[in-house]
Image 1 (cartoon, rainbow, N blue to C red):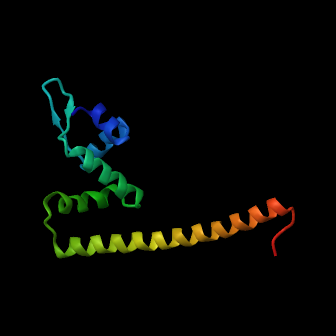
Image 2: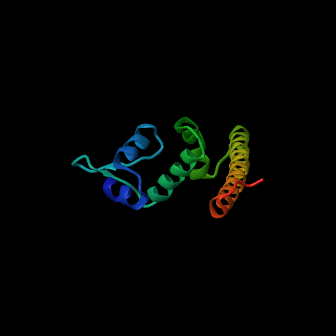
Image 3: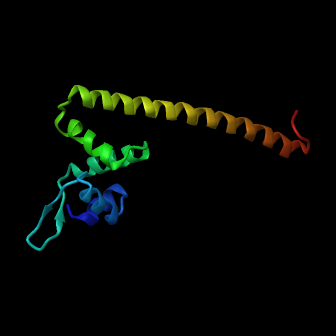
Length: 121
């Protein structure tokens, strides 16, 4: 598929896809006219890259982790790195859940104040 099709299927801009190639996160074949062509698996790869970026990983970290995803081969160092990233993400999840719970409390109090016209105790 061409770059515009990949962008449409993933919701990622053409510019971002070109950046992924520059960072060696994504590969393509070039036609004789120079157009990029991606394998069908590129959709899943782009979505994974997006997830990893959203989780706070840098492009350098993603490049280091992707071979494990592609080939299934892992070194002890890579396994340790994957575990550390997972632990970092778990920590973020817990912090976000705590923040959500605090916001729920504030919303409940504000809703009570709004409905009754008087502040909560």
